[in-house]
Length: 513
Image 1 (tube, rainbow, N blue to C red):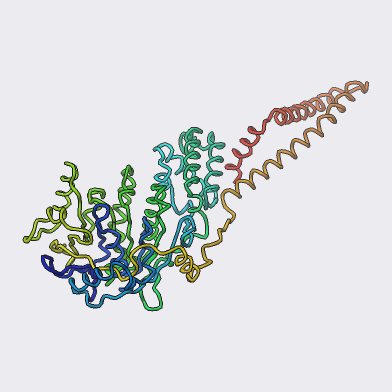
Image 2: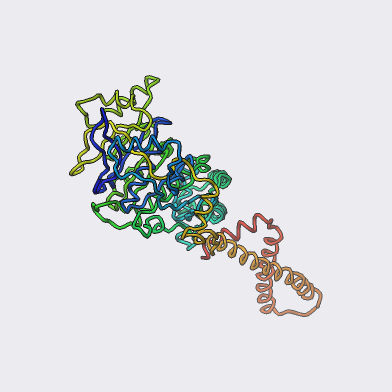
């Protein structure tokens, strides 16, 4: 199908062949359906189709099954006969087995190239979402980011942010006058949440070298788009980290890519699996941000496809922007399920030959109802569709195959070694060290001065030297000032505990930038 990604269709009781127009592929889409109805295979064949059309793809592999995209299907597979029969039924005449060009990524660096970003690039809004902060705590986080900019302290990894928050706490008396109340309780709560996500593996996400977006938008020697697969099976144990990372990636694409209007085909297609995790308990500000990105990122040539069990998982304002849809079966066991099924059916352009609601309930595994954008971006009439079989391997790669694929990657070595540049942690440590040395020198000078001063005072009292009125007045004034200053310094230094000294040092750093 020229200019389209072939999806399926054809056969008895089914409509014509269904294809997703590349021209409208950046107007986003939805893949929905209950567990076990074939969403993963649909995602796999769409990724293959976009890649063959020269469009790079980014997707998350939640169950590990999508890694098979990197290897060709085989005639020995138990479903070979079913696949060839399905291909003939739907008129897929050029069906053959072949691997797709794949790059593996992994936040933990175990099943793919490490993926990193910096704390500064993540920003306070997304970080507050990841940490599940209250409004007051988010306010303090914003203050910390503001101060990092003003003080020229790069925030690269978690230890930078943790050190900065300590400094903010020690300087809170001065900072509160400018930015509002800063409580140690709120700072402590943020630090505890940072510890939680660090235990979940977020310390591997934050750092350098940061991900270069250009590495997600490559093509191979044959002009096929690279399929970037994020290993997410372990990441799903920390759903907040998973959702926040993918939203950050979308935001970065939106910020960095130039405007391209309506291209003949997308610059990148982004599949967001388990999309409900993005919106569960999300604050309105975050949902508004997702809506804004979804609405505007299509002008950057990026198509976003949400993959979820039920269309009701997606906020209505965002759902209305998803023009290309593949709806697998939905189950209706409860009153709420029946209501959601009816609402899902009402979002499609009706087909007079069947009931959309009944079709959604009845389609089997590997079948779906589909509606793709047509000429001028008009939604097509809903059709019952047999999804085409995949050309790549159905199921996950073996560990040996994945290891061999990674070893031969042209990105091998680029992201493997972590960099630790001079940043906020090192800057604050150096300032504290310098201030501590200055305090130590001042204390030593004061200790040396104290016995000399006592000896001098004793000599004046018992020397018997006659002092004139004018000389006595002048000496008394000088001695009184020197003695008072010395005693004040000594008293201050002797009475300073370790904590008070650190507080004084750190508190003075903001003023002595």
